[in-house]
Image (cartoon, rainbow, N blue to C red; front, side, top):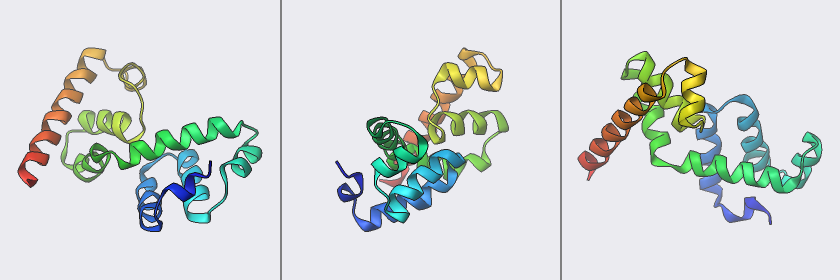
Length: 131
């Protein structure tokens, strides 16, 4: 299945703009698929990977890019304390799990959960205020 045909041109452009916040490998994958228009099978062949695995990864990345929390964290994280900003970026921008984030940042799982809950509360308040 060609993932490019499932997205409108405007949405594809929006995905490539949002992809600027991703790590270089994920950004290149999104750019190749949506900006350049290369099929997943060609990208997978160049990477030496299975096309199905590349499609699954792209679906996960696009789901993360289209999540409203991704926008919230990228827009608001600059005003947060450094620990909360790094946790928010790790969880919502880079798509890491709680344990991986805790291990990567050298924090306790409890601390990461506490900051995640605070980010969720800020997001809910922000969403409620916009309505």
